[in-house]
Length: 499
Image 1 (cartoon, rainbow, N blue to C red):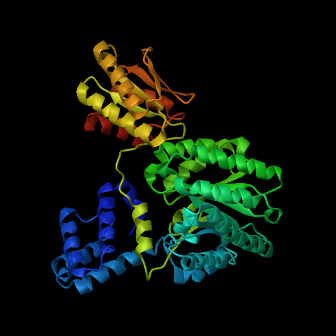
Image 2: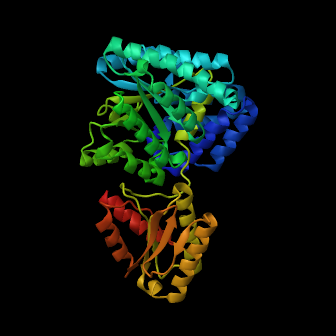
Image 3: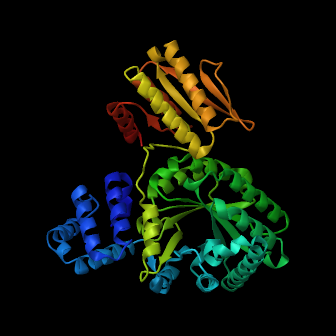
């Protein structure tokens, strides 16, 4: 199943997401057969399916759905086999890694494991990671502390920190051992979320101060779309500078883009601004992961422009070899195909349908909203407030510009209503904000000492708005919102030609 094509086909993503979710959530085959039949009747078959695959689904709908004990296991097995294009079966790891030894490829390994429910499960997962480090092709392992320590243990924080410190010390010693034996640094990278960052950071900070871990290499991995990571990244960079002064290794910061639209995500752009600075080069290494080649191509262009090629590595998914040929660092998610439910969770995360329209971006981001005189003014205000709310929710700050056609710009009642509506919204979102409406050309916002502006820019018409964005395209990213589909198409078609 060519997953990459789904990134531009939202209808197909919805179909596949719902189909996988339904198939693997129950073992009641008759009920599943009815649900899949209803799903295929509701959606047209996705464009990503080949003619042969569509024929198989036609057979399912017209005959085998009546014998679900045959048809449903067949569909499940079909999806498992297709998933082998970018998930590795745990029984096939050695075979894959032997091939890569001859190609001189480095890999990042992650086991798709559930949160540990007991100590026995956690030790089994820890053993998997320790064993995989013995392989020469394994450059790094990516792990979540909740997979190697039962979450219930965290109720007793001091005992849990001590227990987890011992486990992390054991696997760090293993990484140092095989780094020496194989002549290459093994990276232990820890996947962090909001609830696990402080625990992981505290333990690693303590461990890395010890002399025995002088040569150990560690990293922090962030899924950018989940929360604003800029503050956490700054904290890691500060720790990295302290460790370098003590003669330790650089810390690696890895950021992961799950979907195509993540590159337009404000959190991602903010994180990238924090990372891609020349002053960080002595302290950190950076890994940027995506399974979509366009994302990596855009990021690579920025890296070359900033002359940071030595600091940054791009990491591609194992299954997408067309792009992997150009990059030596590959990402291996490993699933147990006998118990595929955790592989399913991973698949659903990657093909989650996009909910909002994000288009065309670079790195110094600004959201742009275009307001035409032909727009219904009441709906325009609703549209603006909705987008401002969404932007602030995601990033906790605002950096956007409203391009307003002349007649609206000089319509004082409308502009007053616009500014007051925006002010009311911002104060509802955060009562600590200071919102200044004195200027005609911008709305000034102050939050905890940080200043942000909503720019109000007058344009003659749609063409002038397009020209404005074209002139700014090297310095700003843009998401364009209007009230009319035809008008949006005019913008999108223009940028498709440009890019």
